[in-house]
Length: 270
Ligand SMILES: NC(=O)c1ccc[n+]([C@@H]2O[C@H](COP(=O)([O-])OP(=O)(O)OC[C@H]3O[C@@H](n4cnc5c(N)ncnc54)[C@H](OP(=O)(O)O)[C@@H]3O)[C@@H](O)[C@H]2O)c1
Image 1 (cartoon, rainbow, N blue to C red):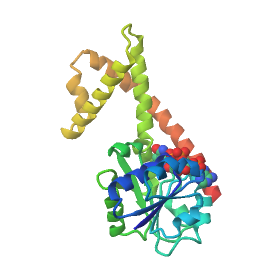
Image 2: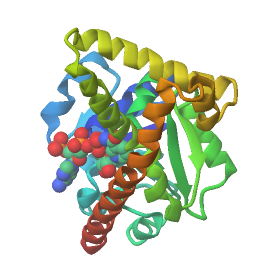
Image 3: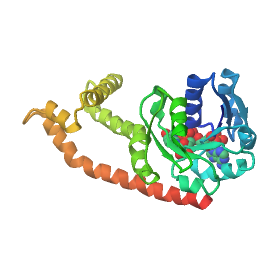
């Protein structure tokens, strides 16, 4: 199977690495980037991967194309490749704020939209998946098998994408912002040691998440387990429960505003 990746930024490169690690014997991979120099290291360490500066040249034998450019450039790239794609080629877009219905205006075949996450680099996290009506069960099995053990897919609707992206795909960035502030809040102590605090925080977060997952405990159950009546954790948790809802409400409102303005910009480019 011939696979082309168009756009070799953070996400294009991550998908290329997973595909090569998982399926190097079963696929032929070609990659293209507007700035070709950014592919040099990858191509020099993966001799069987072909690199192109021309998107059209890259896709001419492709059975499967991953569109990994920034959303505002997606339409231009689709127009650029439209007369080079062979019939039956399957397109998978990772661009945020680009619904399947919009891609269908420029591409008439099978289309999936996936929303990857950087945590796939360490085989964790959830990747959201939306398909158009031409995609069938064996296509979905194909995607799952290409990324087996590295990416866990969850099928959703296009309408749910912006909301759930705030958890799965923006999540690593948002959670890091929370943890960064959590860590900084301990710098008021005289014995502040950034590395020690980071290590303690990471182990505690991993432990808390695994406790919830492996023992099927809700977050509220864990709070109850830790917070003894009238105790210290309860005092801290009460502050968080009072203050955080407004913080998260504002966070979600700002992200939705951004989705709306970028969706408009992307739609106008189509
Ligand atoms: N980062 C994430 O966690 C994440 C998660 C889910 C989805 N996504 C989506 O993944 C896509 C890529 O994101 P990224 O994080 O990999 O971003 P990135 O590292 O900034 O890469 C952006 C890519 O788009 C290309 N590009 C930008 N403008 C272009 C143009 N006018 N014509 C052709 N190519 C152009 C860039 O080429 P150059 O190298 O030449 O600039 C680069 O390959 C985006 O659509 C984003 O919405 C990202």
